[in-house]
Image (cartoon, rainbow, N blue to C red; front, side):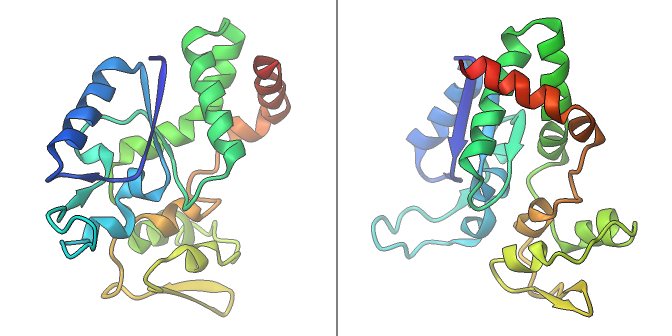
Length: 200
């Protein structure tokens, strides 16, 4: 297949699921992790047994801990438009003209860089890459995204509690400044036109 979308984390006790994700990597040109659980494991990374349906399913990992992932679509849950756009641009990256490939590269670059960063991200990363760089605009997206309420919003800036942080990556990837790209902004109209043309 050209582009494979994978949603959710992988239970490492489920041998079939592990085998299927490995086959997905072998058969797909581009593997896309869709959503916080597939990208970072989110709170499922910290689940250890006791699930009502199948208690033998104890440990969950983001797919990037098992296979190489090319593109992340972070968020819980990502928008349908973003999923559509990534699919179209990944396809154009593989099969498009040179101009389409250039636009697809510009669009996908920040999402590919997120995949290259690995399967963990935390408020400390947000502090280093966004807040300490003076890029935080005080929107509160990180605090709203945190599933364990380790981030509060005080005096227009986020404040994190390290002892509560589970390194799920939700805050980092919800922040619009953590993976902001001038390549996308500068080519927004051309990228949008390429997506709309490919869909027709």
